Figure 1 (cartoon, rainbow, N blue to C red):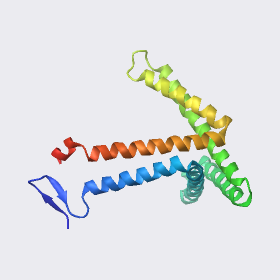
Figure 2 (cartoon, helix red, strand yellow):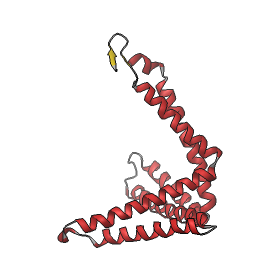
Figure 3 (cartoon, rainbow, N blue to C red):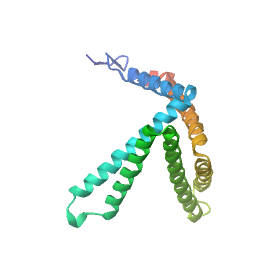
Figure 4 (tube, rainbow, N blue to C red):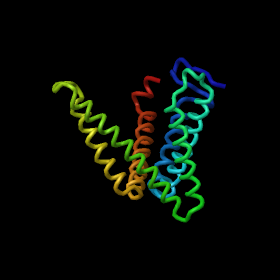
Length: 194
């Protein structure tokens, strides 16, 4: 049973928020260590997860098209759904049927991620260049756009190596997030404030 103790200003009981934060830290740390120690396994699993997500998104787009009234339908919704279904279906099937199918799937997902990163970078550069010279954050937007374009070049030119390199970076990011969350939970200021 959960109860609030007013004198110590903290939750007591089996589901205290601190325990939830510690569990989150453990999950982030486990994912980060897995990505750092086994980047091939983690990167392959992540590619399968992304491809399955694209399949489900394409399926939902196609189903939504059939369920919307005729006057509100968009042909782009149907085209997007069909293209995502075809891409992800062929990619997952080739990953299971071909000896190098997993590498083809990782390469395709990494290339698409590179294209997405390039469009994000171009959008950021366009936003930064059209902003006034003294606008706050203009430099950071331009820097982010340039960095996104640089990352997209690496993702598109060498998709497999860059995918596993990004997997290692994701592992470091997850470990840093786990440490930051753990430090926040154990912070003396947080302990006093409740």
